[in-house]
Length: 448
Picture (spheres, rainbow, N blue to C red):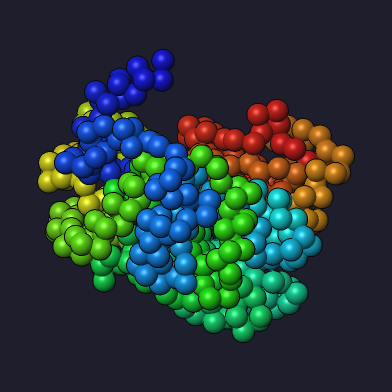
């Protein structure tokens, strides 16, 4: 059933503007991944090294990754960025610690906070220059967080965010360290940054203490491939120990070899391939937010929603976007998009540009704004409190005891430990009407 589903999709898709970065295996052409990759799917044997405690080829590949991203050491992850986020938060903080947390974090950050027993203080990023798209945390927002909660042990921030917006990590890292804290960065969408001057510097180069990058999101690597980076303030042996708690003890050697190959491609060809790709991107005239490989076309002014545009892209042109929102599309490019992909994309964009303007154009809904607020208790304590599932209408004013997200990109709308507001309820209802998949409230919203 699953294979039939995938074959059906493959027959429909003519151009991929979504992750993973290998673009339907196009990037694997001429490599072992295109031939018979599972001939190399072995296990820990004499001569094959071991991810759980590498001393040979795997260790050398991790050291290469560290030199690329500016880290003291890097770890290969075969369970995606999620396992790296779990490990770095668990290693950096102790139960009961107060920690500043980017409110638009991935849901794995909340899961890690629960496992580590920390008490998050949620900080809200500002808006961006593209309507309806969130920005990143500012230095002022972080300063306000420390001013209100001086006991905070550090900051967990997302940069770049899902849409390519990058925070001023150099300034923020100085601020966090001034307060004696540690800076943890979810850099999942910035795996391609070190390979061209067209991109921002990496999180580790800007002073992060720990960071995670997803190779599969933008590089030529399969899903589940990622890296955890550490600075000089953490011991590699301790992070390796924590990773054993969260990562599989039976790693795929195919994924390990694919990660090494993706990094080598970046080192050897990344700069040239980036220039070639930008030459194809610029004529489109699509807005972006700092990462030129993340395009945000929108037809909001003429009344065409992102969901409507997405249907046109798929059904008329065979183009699959990474994300459709009520405001527009998110298109993710990589080195393995072709001239033909961009010719088709240009045609689809111009087609939507030429559609007649609707008589009634919806106003863009304002972004929700939240003040820094501490969760009412450590997330691990929420499970010990009596809770119940209630309807949306009955949840207002109650303390949320779960995570409610819109998928993609798994960014929470409701966070555990905060008070449910009327604005959040309205957002959930609107996104549901727009066709988003809402997770975490299958039986209603969990509250205490």
